[in-house]
Image (cartoon, rainbow, N blue to C red; front, top):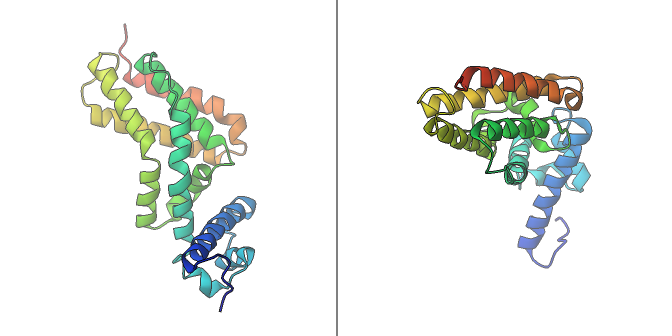
Length: 204
């Protein structure tokens, strides 16, 4: 029987679950998601592989839970202080740049997950999408305000917001594939903004 490392069984389970998540995060960053096995994670924590299954069904579930607990906080942080006094165009530009800087930072789980999303199952992809949803929500708010104020062309906010979101995602995927994302992020951001603003901004 495993040694209880807390005053109650509930505390022990909570501690072990936390250790599994922390171990997985460390290993995913150190050696890659694909290269990390369940046995690696269990050994890092000091538990048996069968004990791992008392807490998580598989490695994918661990990754998704890490995303759900960390990515929304990171997104809130880099979107939380967008200057409200800027025009819709400038706010969208600033948000796009911050989003791509976020992706270029290889120390966050958002970047790691973007590489793995195509390999994840449908439910995991759905949960990862929800964790990143504030970016899309912010884009929709900006587009709605810009359309109402006549700053962006067209009047279909939903399609416009989807277009902008997909362009930003395309740019993010381009960075993920780059040899040195931090070196290329400014070039990718400039190209993205040209594509966006040549297509959606009303000309004088």
